[in-house]
Length: 395
Image (cartoon, rainbow, N blue to C red; front, side, top):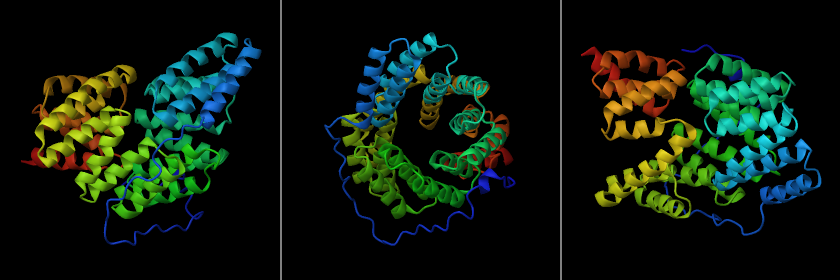
């Protein structure tokens, strides 16, 4: 068992929160208020204001920084990541005007995290710290990068520094995720509840995101009704929030309402197609016995995921798909090995372990799956693979 560390206990004593599901019967509830407003969002308004600043002061880096931040917020709100490409160009313009300007470096690190370029993000954040060392946002970026690279000890230390500097919503959210990674589901729920309480009400997307993360942790804890209420709350706060809709779908699946889940995912896929949704729909159609529809969605997944893999420089989702469907096993192992060379978080370790096992290398898989279990995670997929790999090895 992992020893308790300060950051994993950072908010104990601050809260006395019990979230208990009280309904005993699940019902297929429609997604309320999920139609997006046609009015300009706050991100749209920020874009307009920043463009005016750039027009007035084209040689001032600050206007470009404001515009890049607005583009990134728009991408997050809409899941239209073409706005991130605009943000990247704008950040480059800012740095061309003022090399190593602090705000541009922060934005670049944030964008690199979005693109899953974790080693680059860590380097950029460290570069920003040569200018200023006491910014809790940058410590948060460092936490995120270290988590994704598998340096959990370093991530805990960085998160602790973030909490010490400013214990706000973003800090509590990172504490929550670290607790979850270390198998402390109750602590993760407590910390994310604190994140919601301290969230900025003027950032509805951010508040909704916190509710989604709390819903995910409640779902992991088996508190299905409480989880679904969090997804519904997120949709009330920020109608059309994609992660909330996907959470709603997972809640329906957990409740055994496959038809209701299909309806949710079909509606979202028609509005904004994604690889993840295609994969889920393929699995749901398979469970319903509609093989043709499942096959079509699996093909959609591969097309969309290849685009994602090229953008993120990561094949993990494609590898997992192949392994789960016993396809391209040799290629999956080659790519999983390459992924492991770049990052050693528990999920990458699990993927390589499963690829080794599927390719008949059970003894090699044992070392990797034990590496995936090193934090005490309760992740269902990792523990399922561990049960199979370790049992097979003992025979």
